[in-house]
Image 1: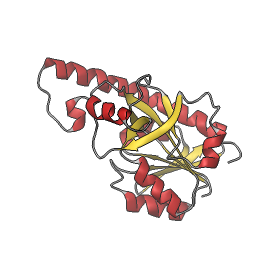
Image 2: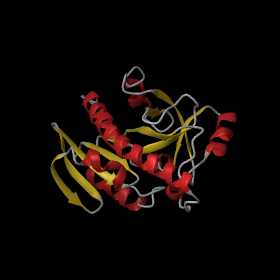
Image 3: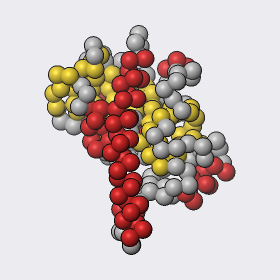
Length: 214
């Protein structure tokens, strides 16, 4: 392949981006196609990278020139807003990271923390008291380990879905709705995510355009 492999946890996150690929073809849990003249593949990792063997197999078979880990992340830094496009400096290859330090695509660049479950405001507050954490997600750490194993350059570029003091609706965290307030919050959050998926697809397309020469 020699192109770019883009990862998402779930198809729901990445479908708007995958639909932008021309000459699409589906294979296993991969979507292959072209974005402009760039050969691009999309891989669904599963929440927490439950499909890690599939991902490792895809990297070995496709031999991409670059891997972009994307999808959504929870904001930890208090100034971040939903829809901000952020770059993880600890889950990106140094040489690729350096190219984007001055890019106008990103609202912020900083450290990501890995979590094993959807985190609420209390967990995010504890993280702010420790090291300087920008955002949290459940896949970047494990996916990055695969990239390092195969010596493939990688970049982690995600969109903020929930602010530092904002809880994720219970139904999105595996819980039950407890009243009208929960229902309203869930509907509002779901509507926001439908919009943000398209915004994320646009930002990723712009990012790939800026990667000319990589």
